[in-house]
Image 1 (tube, rainbow, N blue to C red):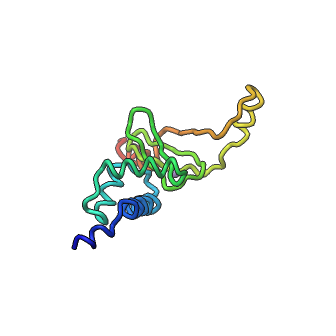
Image 2 (spheres, rainbow, N blue to C red):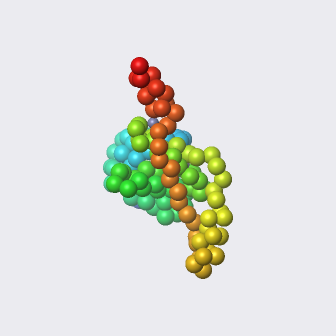
Image 3 (cartoon, helix red, strand yellow):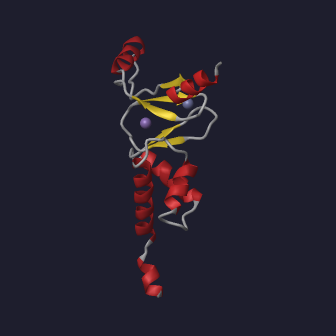
Amino acid sequence: MEVKSQKKTPRRRSTRQRRVILQVLRSTKSHPTADWVYEQVRQEIPNISLGTVYRNLKLLRDMGEVMELSFGSTYSRFDGNPEPHYHFSCKDCGRVFDVDIPVAKELEDAVRRQHGWEVLYHRTEFYGCCNDCKQQQEEKQP
Ligand code: ZN
Ligand code: MN
């Protein structure tokens, strides 16, 4: 029994944890919080802690595998798609959507020309009211 448990080296365990966390993130387009990821991962690895999930999310972010989206004072959300793209945040329901427009590289060129800085990337978030919430508000109106 003891030999069997020793086979699960910390390295192997953390690799599996990280793989499951990445799978969970890649399987959704909802840009979830760490808490949501934790609840999903627990179905596969029941004894994992929220701290471990959080640490691995930060690690995956540093490895460039996922993106961390922070929206001011609210909790960070995570995105399984690390490629540069824009987001739309609904002020009413709080959902975060991908925006299907090309990333405006010309903005980076403009900053480079104006200031001479080396621009690595830029982030832009759009805020407003999503279609579901818009429709609900229209239905409420007499
Ligand atoms: Zn909404
Ligand atoms: Mn996204």
